[in-house]
Image (cartoon, rainbow, N blue to C red; front, side):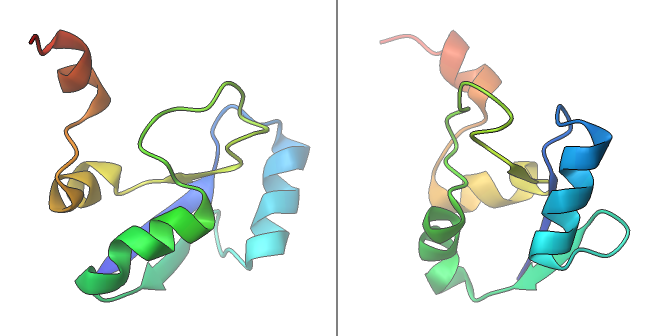
Length: 86
């Protein structure tokens, strides 16, 4: 399976460029291939917690394919978490 990573959209253009260079992104994207069994560990290693961080500087990269990946981990989308009741 593949994950598509990108700089956080709320970073400045200069900050995005630094992130692109640091991660070796091309055209503002990085495609990472992994096995499904290792997906949780890769996301944890990259700091891609399904819960949003306080600032874009704390969460410098985002998972573009989050809608496809999070259901595989048993996590619902943030909008669904906010509306679900006990």
